[in-house]
Image 1 (cartoon, rainbow, N blue to C red):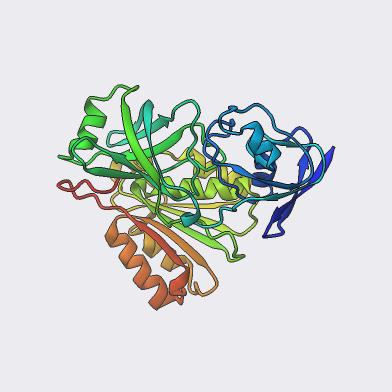
Image 2 (image 1 turned 135 degrees about the horizontal axis):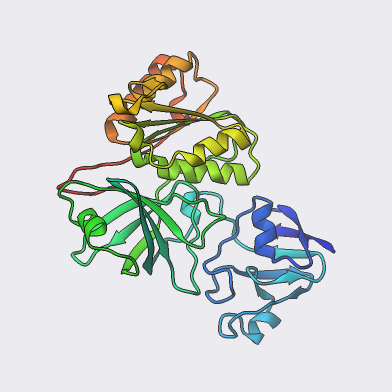
Length: 342
C-alpha cells in the first residue's frame, strides 16, 4: 500500500510504501533527511510526527523513548507508515546542512590499481553511517595533530564503506605509511563531511566534469549520484593523466558512456611509446576548449592540481563565456612537505 508523506514546513511531499522506511522513501524522492546510522541507534533522523500513524520499527529504546513517542517523535530511518503522514524534520539541501562529525574508522581494504595510487575503503563502527553529499571530503586526524584530506569517491546512496583514492606523495609521511606499512584493519580517526564542492541539482544546464589524476574521485561520486538520481542533463567527463597507467580506474567511465550516455574523453599529457595511445593528448582543460566554443550555458565541475584548476577557471570564463558562478572546483595540493590534500 502507498501512503503520502508531507514534510513541514517545506510542504514537500512524496510517496512511501507501507514496507518502506520514511527515510528511504524520501531519499528516493530526492528529499534528503538527516541521518547518522540508518538503524535506529543514533537519533540523528529524529523528527516530529504531526499527523498519522507509523510502525516505529526496531530501534534502541534509549534513542526513542516511550515518552518521546507519546510526544509525537519518531525515528524516520526505521519508521514505516501506517497511514498518510505529516512530519516535521529538517531537510538537507546544501553542504552546510550536513552535520560534521568525528569518528573512528577501520581500513577495510587497500587496492593499488597503479604504482602510485591506492583505493582505500574505510569501515565505520557498526551503528554509524556518514551522511555526505557527492563531492565532499573527509580529513584523517593524525596523532601529531595534523590532517590529511581525501575526497569521497563513492556516491551517498552507496555508503556502507567510504572509498578514497590516494596518490602517493614522494616523501610524504602519511602516504608512505599507507603504501608501505598498512596492511588493512588499522584504526584511524576521520572528520567529515567537509567541503562545498557538490553537485548543484537545482539546475537544468548540461555539465562538464574535468578531472586531473585522483581528482577523478569526487567526480566519480558526482556522476554516479547523478545516474542514480536519474538526472537527464547531458554530462561529459574529461579525465587528464600523464600515461595510460595513470587512468587508474577506466572501467566505470566506459560503463557510464555505454549504459548512460555520459561522454568520456580521456586525455594524456605525456604518453609514452609503449602506451600506443590513439586518443587525445595535451592539457585536459585545453581539450575542453577545443571541443566547446561557447560555455555560457554550461556548468563545469573541475578537480585536480591547482595549476589545472586556475587555467580552467581563467580560460573557460574569459575565452568561452562560462559564467564564473557556474565554475565549481576543488583544488588538490600535492606538496610533499605539507602533504595537505590527497
